[in-house]
Image (tube, rainbow, N blue to C red; front, side, top):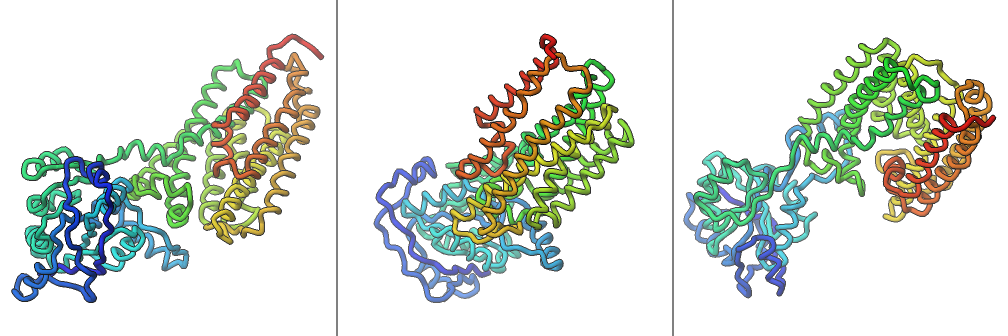
Length: 513
């Protein structure tokens, strides 16, 4: 049996030993003990070779080490499935470098232990290249332990080797019931995302000083489906509201079911998009915190949930009307085309985003069975294309601040910022002009609005709204998604509330021609 120590280096000491107490609770650490110099070559402990064993024990640290299981405790997500997907990407020439997701809570625990002076080791039963890369990435790891052929002999052999390697004792971070022999040999146990049974079993033999709970898969799946983005699907209500048929219960129920169908379909497409964008999202400053990119949501769960949600949404659409199903299929085709290729094409990506928003209106028209207004569809196309450009403008500005010349996963360069700004502003102003023409040529001819003053307040309010969005984007004060900004920004919410009030006045207010 062999336990190999790779790239061991001296662990940093820190006078603030309270940090270790925060990380371990009641754990203690010895201060001032000798830290061995890094070995020039890999050290091995072979149970069949007494000389090698004595040499390994002699070189073992007398400090209490923290040993972290890399394969199942520190790494999160679906490593095996992700590696299979990466092989497919490499075969198709679309592979991208990305960081392996790690549990940030364990990273913080290990970092504090290292600051307090405890040597931190990563233990792996797989290729050491990945472990060495993660060690360099973290910066505070003392070394990598490769169990070699110990796995074939069982975890009891690994426990024996670790006890010999660390005569001063070690604390162990693990997550599997297979590792019980290691915990029995350890001084203290730290449990990573344990089940209740595992926690009880470990606590029966070894003091558990910390237990990191597992995230709720259902909650992470819901977050990955981006329910806050479902507010966009409220666009299906707009055609019914503008048609003057809001009092028809049958039409209202049809639109409500269309909203549900669209939420299921869009949720599925968000999952598919995140699966396709996994390498890019893990390199992104904000998207790396998404459930899939961070590893909180297993890839296999997302790959199973996406087709189920898609099938449910399309079934509801088929039940409503063939036109609703057709619109949903067009939306689905556009989303997949965007995820696979179109988002990499500059300018085209923003126009496609505008088109996907407009399809939501088409779903509402089909579900409510009302006359389609070309003005409404053109207005939507320009308004949401402008928001698409605002999203790209924000991303380009943040890339520029980080010194990046390109936008990962997109076709934009840092020098494209002024052009994106010009295109986005022109689309926004076009939307305001089209809204004026829409009111003149279409809305006023319906004869269902009592107060025209309320309608004419909408264009200047829209101008204020898009102006604020672009001002914040240009200043770098907006997050990646303009829709999220609209929801969180009090000024934008006030403007939109005023627009709704003006619409209500035009509908229910006193008659003023």
